[in-house]
Image 1 (cartoon, rainbow, N blue to C red):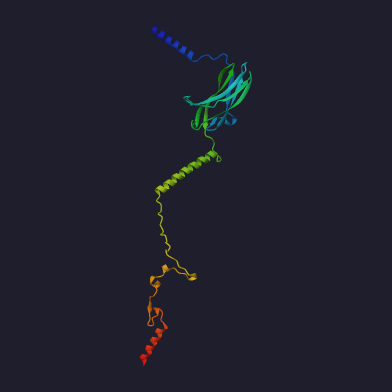
Image 2 (cartoon, rainbow, N blue to C red; image 1 turned 180 degrees about the horizontal axis):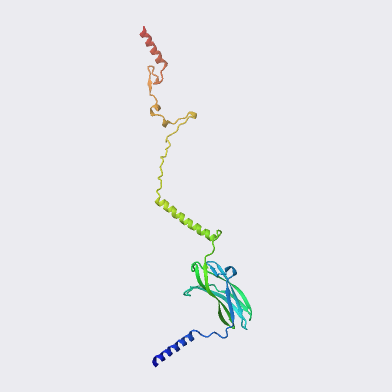
Length: 255
């Protein structure tokens, strides 16, 4: 029984020692600086617009008896349930002195990204880093759940119009491909070409003609034949001597 009690006491002392080592005491030389952050009045619900610049105001009050220097303001986005780090925000450097007992409000701009964030809840953590006597201290300014929303659409947004044009171009190209692939196309009728007549064209003044259109038997010239008088005449022509001989024979027959 005593052995079990001793083991229990030993385990309790070991647990207390681990807790003391894991959570060290705060630095007693750290100046008392109060830092708070709030969204503007037009964004009272703490909405973070996806893909755009978001603004939050950080109020710093130096309640110590020493002057401090405001180094920078930075932050990070975390998963709302597991507190897993998603992305760090851009650190904005100030390098401004803040006298003892003074109070100051500074704007802080941060961006969300389309690729990393989706619409919904996300944890936003912001902090201020200040220095005094060569030592730097970090004070939490904001640690709460915010809602990521999409930007409001506008008909005059060029990005929206470019997206619509790209989508329409893709659908138009796809529709044309389907049309020429699956819709039967009408066959084109071939009209025979009319060939022009080939040959020598002979023309004489206004009454010109083309020989290739005239039949061959009309183009042949009659052969010349000899008469009794010995003169050569064509078959279409009759000499005066032949006509006179023929008339004389007719008269002798009548006698």
